[in-house]
Length: 227
Image 1 (cartoon, rainbow, N blue to C red):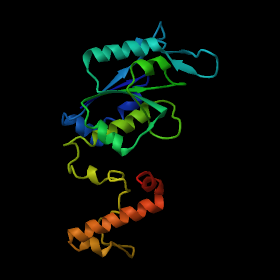
Image 2 (image 1 turned 45 degrees about the horizontal axis):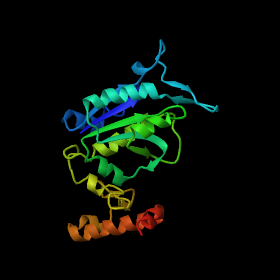
Image 3 (image 1 turned 90 degrees about the horizontal axis):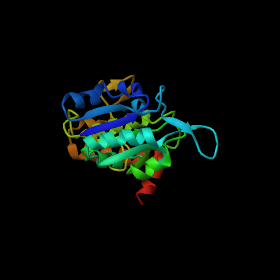
Image 4 (image 1 turned 120 degrees about the vertical axis):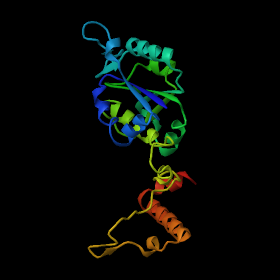
């Protein structure tokens, strides 16, 4: 899989995407990440990529011309399955979308700033708009890092145990059950006996019941959404 990210602050993405599982995915050749600096497409001496918004109001807007020139250059090299704009008014990101996107070959992510990007870019190029939550960030870079991480770990071969991602929270519309490791007794707190029983069927049933109970308690909205 190849993911390209358009940003005016590419250094914000360097650290989150160059360590741990994302670094492993790239080292294995399973994921290629390219961060594209929008600034060289900007206007004038200062490589300006933003301008005042028509109609007045506070905040600048990322302009059509730099973004269009950058997108066209990238499209000339790659046939993108999706061009995704990270924006607070996009569809709410969830595990099902990550699963869908992990099956794609080429993705282009656009990181907005200021008051956002000119609407005409959204109309002409963007195929999907995604929000990682009902709040506003200073820019789209952190949201892009969230997408890349959640998608990249699903690529077969990235995780040492490929079944691990399948048992994460939200994969089956439930939160993950409690997990335990050694020691068996810690400060008088015991690991549940069922996990030491060796009975796979009992363990799976216990985990399901725990997932269901935890979801009812902590995220009942998930269960309502599945009705």
